[in-house]
Image 1: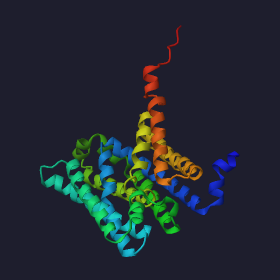
Image 2 (image 1 turned 60 degrees about the vertical axis):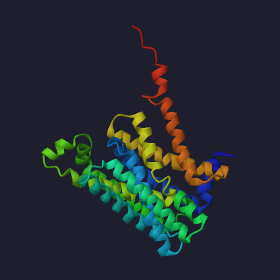
Image 3 (image 1 turned 30 degrees about the vertical axis):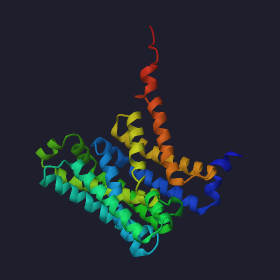
Image 4 (image 1 turned 180 degrees about the vertical axis):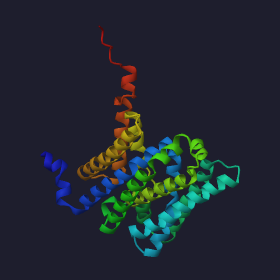
Length: 290
């Protein structure tokens, strides 16, 4: 097998593979930087909770469309995800519950409700598609939607970058100077939900957060500069998508889980090889002697 057959032929020969690759590229560019900010804000598990929260809206979109329409399911997931984010924030402010407990309560309820809705009308195959995604079934409208979400994400991040960084590291300072921190917090949650909806269409609700948090963890192991962390996260997410698609094609594996497992493999390698990894800690380089 030549290098062309191994690395390029699947995308040259099949349109669905090209669409899946473009979807992975868009998801990596948008979800990677968002995952870095989630990690910096210590909201990694909140992102996972919100990925499950989109399921009821996606299930309702599935019932209304009468088929696995990614556009209808995406719009439903967007409404459900934003509703859970807003309700969780409101409950944590008017009760004694912390925000993480509020998110956990709503996400468990949403996950159960979504599975129940799908099971009322769909088959087990439909439920598996909703939970684990259908990246090889991405059509042109869904691809346009994912591309628009990635473009909006990068544009909004560029506009609110400085106040968002300040809100992450020192929200008290931002409040002191009248920086309207809650507005930036809401915009950030909106970007999180949008990218989860985009990832949901490709990877399903159970793994939608995978291309956010695993690349962000990889980036944190390799860098301490925020811009470089965002770049490394985006690059590792897109690389995971490409290598995962190649592996799934040649080995006959499910594409979505293979992409996430590829990201997990890169994360495992980073734990050992990164500057802050185990190899540098237990096998340090000898100092030069004068």
